[in-house]
Length: 355
Ligand SMILES: *Cc1c(COP(=O)(O)O)cnc(C)c1O
Image (cartoon, rainbow, N blue to C red; front, side):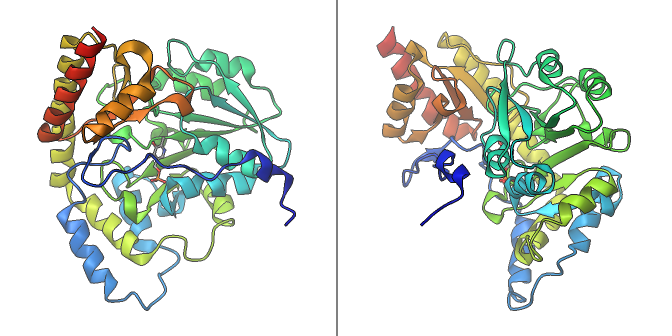
């Protein structure tokens, strides 16, 4: 069958491989699971599984809007933030348009832009941090979109708020700037960019968030885009009528209400982060100062794929970052205390073997 030419450059997503019974520290999921309130809401919503969702998602939109102090018309619920990326590309990218993406970041920016025929320019990073100077330098009036992730997957490093503001002041207002805040809930530094506070000021800014990480709803597929009303209305025109299922929407609303669950998840993450860093320090491993729920760690011996295979054989999956252009690095999700115990003994054995 003749396909669109662009399909020659696209590959179906290959997920991190799953091993039954293994501890999964390879996908940045919440190890505490979903909130119990979200599970209750999902069960209740299941009773109406034969009724189409209210495709306007008024409850989810206003729950998110209330929490963020914005209008429901500035929120677009999506089937995971992955879908938001596809809808954004569908709304704005014509074949041949140029987009800028940092070298080491989430794969779905390139995938979604490429799907609509964009030409991708990868922007170099500085010490593995997103380099807004280099991005400004690479941008021109013909740049259609720029994708930024803060905290960035897979480094965990943030953009600074004041620097992001200066960037938005300098970039052409006809260039769409997408800031992915999938991990923003975990950022603890006061200087961390809060792009949502900027959507009133920059009408070319679209911010993405997700229920897949802190809220533990990765399998439900719920995320959302936030922007000025005009951008949200434009992006909304590209979605299918019932893009979020009503069970997921109900679970998402309930999980926003369960602040105790979110707080205990954040607390577990903070303790796990400190403990992982002391493990890395004692094993002589190099890591990046994360503000997310994972660490980028340089593999002992420099062969991340081999280390990931060794830990998987020992019952803990972690992510080798070859596909992110960082073949010497691993990405390790911060787990529960028990999960960290298991990983610690595997890493220690590996570090010993390498000497
Ligand atoms: C996990 C993740 C997402 C979330 O994707 P969903 O489709 O909402 O599950 C988005 N962006 C980044 C950078 C991520 O790591």
